[in-house]
Length: 151
Image (cartoon, rainbow, N blue to C red):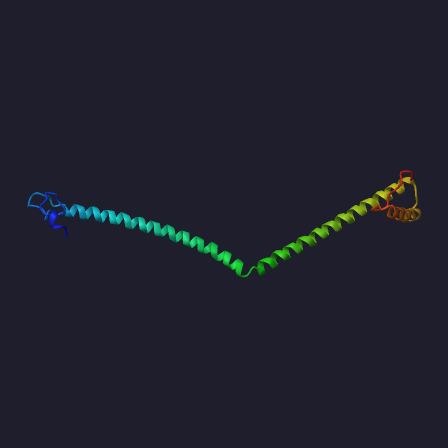
């Protein structure tokens, strides 16, 4: 439908030329319709590609959100598991410290025994000497017996 003022104005408003005198306008409806169909097909393909991309984003977001929601809904099992790991690590550290302390003590005692033996002190006397040295070191605030260099 066009305005009456546009009929017979020598401007082809209709693709079939029906608004002008015969033979003045060429019949282009098929070409116009084909171009319109091509454009609509390209638009539809772009929409399909965009929707597929969007679906991928939505799926990824749902997976991420699902993980966050499950973590937020019931964090207790994860917290308890981490607490158990922490306790196990603390126990291992304590064990390593005790082992280190025992090794250091054994090494110190072996050094004392070697020193006393080198100094010619017999084993009975070395036991008494060790206890005297331990008491002296404890009174002095030391961590263990110290042998004087004169022995």
